[in-house]
Figure 1 (tube, rainbow, N blue to C red):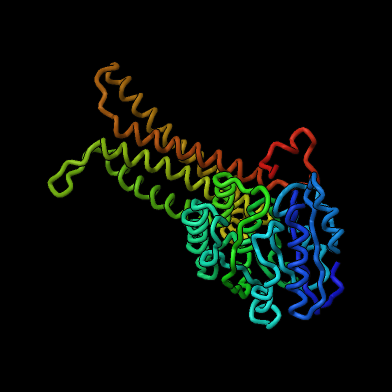
Figure 2 (cartoon, rainbow, N blue to C red):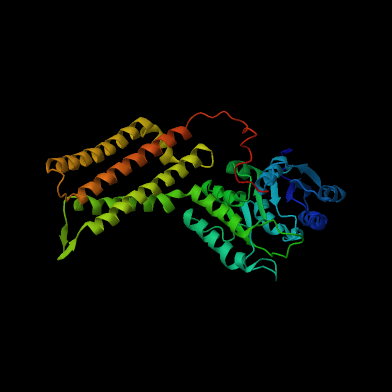
Length: 397
């Protein structure tokens, strides 16, 4: 929809039943663009409203496009794809943001100082505008986790809905989500694409109408999305460390107790080490599968997973799994043979038998994980899910 011009601003307003506030939001946006002396393009994305939102938008001179797929991200993606100008501002349609002052986020783009600008509400929250849970726990914690996982100090209010971005920068993001995760995806992709990110303080007002947010459900979705994009720090590193520590504890104790600085270390420590080893391998598997999903679905390119698929094939992983299962079975049968030779008498091979079980479980886990990895990489040419399973995923309804 772009005419290739950079002499105007497109203001994108995702809308779901916002008739009470939408008219004023459009007029504020018009005033904000006029203050900059630029051409306006106010675009309302109707995301399945059942009230008069679309009519109100038309009455106030805004363009209206419909997005039947329900979701915050779906609506915004439709808006960005249909924007006329190369400078684009997104905001909510509930009067929480004063768009008559949109130059706060638009100026850094217009002056060439940034590619992506996001508002920071935290010092400008008006009375009653944000629940205490969101203000003092949810938003600060999720924003801090994002900064830690992606090693960037650029954003301190990662879920602010007032943002500005150039068309070129938005195309580089290649966002794919359709739900509330879109807010996190934009920031994460901006960091990974090394966009010039600017943050500007803004005022956050009490909304008009009923909030669409679900605190814990939406918070978990944002956290899950961040983990999916950065499982290395949260899963792989702790998993690898735990697996190695568990192995270092269990392997020596498989052949008898140890004396460490005058203290006897026996089978109890081996049990702890073995369980740590098994649990850690499960964590490693989950981390690798998360990275594989992100890589194969196009969320982000992952060099580790690309290397795995090139060099650590299903056949090689199966051989490793078979080797570990073989070691476990060999030790188990050797112990059974010793018991048989002794005439089924007393048997004191708990340590070695437990180590055999560790090998067996590790082998089975590696084999099962490699099978799932190989299935995930199979060619897929399904443009649309069958009707029977289309609505089985997480939706925004």
